[in-house]
Length: 467
Image 1 (tube, rainbow, N blue to C red):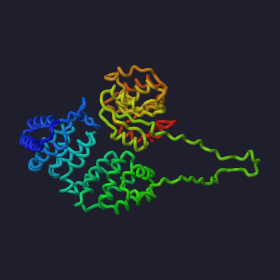
Image 2 (image 1 turned 90 degrees about the vertical axis):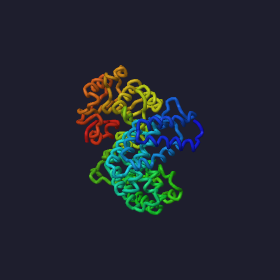
Image 3 (image 1 turned 120 degrees about the horizontal axis):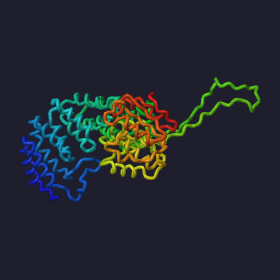
Image 4 (image 1 turned 60 degrees about the vertical axis):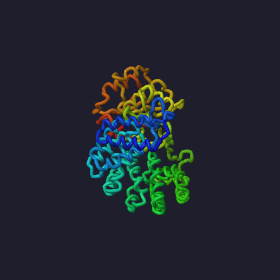
């Protein structure tokens, strides 16, 4: 990478801005600039951004900042062209081009009716954390400042109690507004986030840390009051558990304020008398009836539960988040690449440990099937959700020996991706201890997921049923 000469960089960025109204030429010259400033000391063979699936030029941030500065006025004065150029930049699929696309959206007036659909769709598509945050912060810059009421309506939609999968979006979108010293309506923010803080799902602990720290910096007294009120009044055990986990990242004064409320409490069990149990006091002592003691139920080790997502999904999908919420501490990794690459990643994660409960969805179901059939001694139970057990194109992976690992398959009658009959045929050949649950749902099993009793399905004596 050549040293950055600011005078030359300004000229290059200004020349690029001249092609603002000629999208194809703009993209050609943008690629040339990004390639010119590639940092070859960091560039890898795969050239993929860390923690992401996006290609990257490894271009220094200063280059993008200069390009953004040159595009700002043109984008604000010509929102229609800015939107078209943003679409092209997004479709290019590189980290740098998608960050530029997010920036251009942030220069478009909030009244533009095509703005929110772009942000919503792109946020759902993206896995890269840097681009996602840019979409939820930079892309909403003008809406946040010029139409704060419209912005808060959007955030309320993100933070809807029944849409937990979008809570992270709502939190990330709110943080710049809270941090803005000119913003004065903090009580509205506290009202919005209080139910989310109380719910405290473990999957949101990093977002909650950012939120609470930002709130505390904006208004220490109100933040302490809200947190103490929540911790004192809540009946949700996860609230204090999650808060205790993330509290080391709080400012020291806030840690001190919450220390007593976050200290683990000793569990005291009071057994009440059972007057309905009849004991004959006149009977010989050896014949007196003793209340039957129920066998203690063995607690499931959530750290040995793993969820394997499908081909176009990731660890932030709806099912992954809901499983992590139901079974805190379970493993929900990301998998990338072809099937063999994913299997190699899975083997590294599972290691030599035994007693795994594997939940696999679609292609993840095929992964779980292959691993279980090859390493049945490592698997306690296998749960397959619309598994991709199909001759075309996965027949070569399914030449496996049958196993007796307890297996439950959940499949929808309206699945238009994986044929139910074909998958069932494979499952019945491969698993001698099989329960096949057919539900009235599609491939994603969205409705069935809400209705099924997952504790029973994953438990030792699971009897799969719809509650």
